[in-house]
Length: 297
Image (cartoon, rainbow, N blue to C red; front, side, top):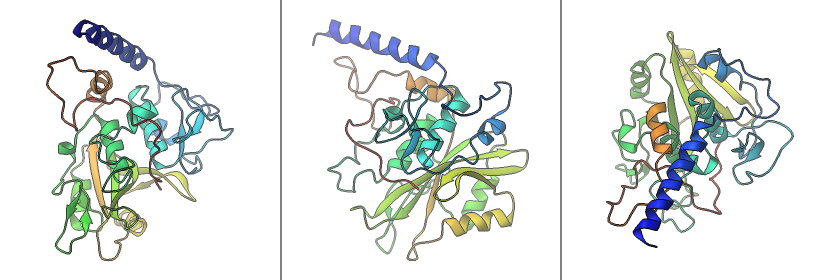
């Protein structure tokens, strides 16, 4: 392909991306219309009580579907944790983020042939893709996304949920901001011994610290972490495994930064001679075709 053809294709891709992102995300089909004047807390409350559905999400067109079958038109609502987080970010930011943009394998290290296991870091990729952030922006991240501790076990990015640093992190959050989290755990089912298996969001507001998530048997719900009872409850849900840590990676949602990254050209379309972008860079292009996310709880 000539340089001129590449430039024309790039221009078309940019215009198409901006056009798509200029359209607000559709409100999920069948849900009571949401008043535009309400605040973000009321918007998030509108999803409370939606049942848990394995692999459940809202399609790019606003229909109830699944990550693996985005063309499905299911008759009732249902979210898994990642489907809920994607829809919450869509509605909070007004950005029409596609399923493929949300699930992009940022480092190309979790495909079917990955030596660490397919989709081992799906949850971490998801929160970075949906926040406009990079791994360097994970709050209080003393560890990389996969690091071996002294016993040889793999540990994830972020802080130990069952340690004092978790409470310190919650106390440092900015009131009125929204944060996206991914929880990792040791997992023998993955060749690398680690899985980022659960996601959700944390919303500090007027002294409260709400964690919002979709979980099996409960569906979409929230819990206030501004008191010891809330901390104890979330730690019961995320206990240590075989004396290893469950860790939470937390990033701040940056809507303007996310908007700019969504508008970047799709991956692989850089003009000849342009510098290659880092694996953790700005592009939020499509995920690998024919793949589906690992099960998320």
